[in-house]
Image 1 (cartoon, helix red, strand yellow):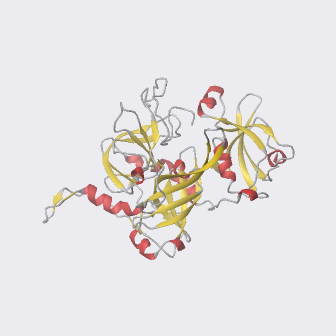
Image 2 (image 1 turned 180 degrees about the horizontal axis):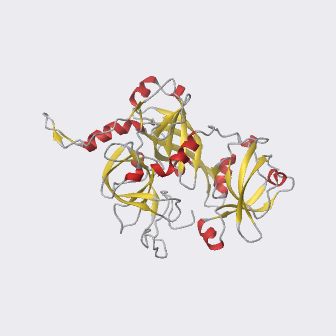
Image 3 (image 1 turned 45 degrees about the vertical axis):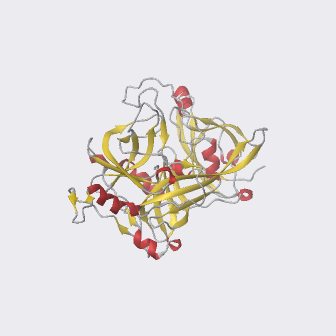
Length: 415
């Protein structure tokens, strides 16, 4: 994203961003946001504790499955008590024990191109870690909610459950604008013993949140496995540059690796998806989560998409365009939608044959939002040459306004 908010990477040097003061209670000047979900450079042998399963309290479109995980139980305002053995327990202890089986760790193995000291380019394998929440299951799959930035660019995705067992996962749907994704694990790949230990998360109503009420965050902090932090809801309806929609602000500690994990209320219900934190020395205890009720319709739509796997490079389809990123700052400056600006069409290319025109802006492919060339290329990896896909574009009119249009494009091969 072309603004002061950037995803965390280990090589990044944090610099204080320059920013105009904002009237809408946005983040103060000279602060920086990190997407808390990515702990990079971990050894491939690290085991991540996690848990998956989801409830369907909001999502009622999923059929019963042969294997099914239990649903996380709600907690009724437990009081602080002391057992006969002298150990202290609290409502947070009970909430954590109930909810942890519904949270998983996600390991993203990707291949990136790195420029060498002598100017050449070579491919390098990188590993990052994030979190996820089991939200539902259908007849064949367990469905897990996470952040888009946790899974983007993945070559291989691995999900680890509370019992430390791990299985491979595939992306079911993503939305880059709201930084959400749903990944799927085949039920046949999950052992019966693991199914008995994991649980489907109970989803709460984030529209009823009150400032000052308790908040508990669970996730794969720093890639070390599950951890629990607690705090309060510091604010609601926060907005951040580069993030679409409103966010929940909390002082519960949120760190790299927590992205995609659960923010819970005092009843143990998921009220948000942990997403970003402020990362400068002057700021402490400011993290953000996506309110679960605000995105329930979107999550349902992502859950019901066809699960796709990547196609071998030689068989992948191509649009036949040359494009340029329209970043958030460019969009604001020139009054254009974010996406990929088409500045050249290949002769007899797939896009040209389908009627796409120079000057249009691609904003989605196959229903998945794209905001730059990188995300467009990533989505094309799931489609074969000769396959037809819906491409959503914004077309400029003579008055300068853009109108949305969806065009079916039969993908071609690289010329």
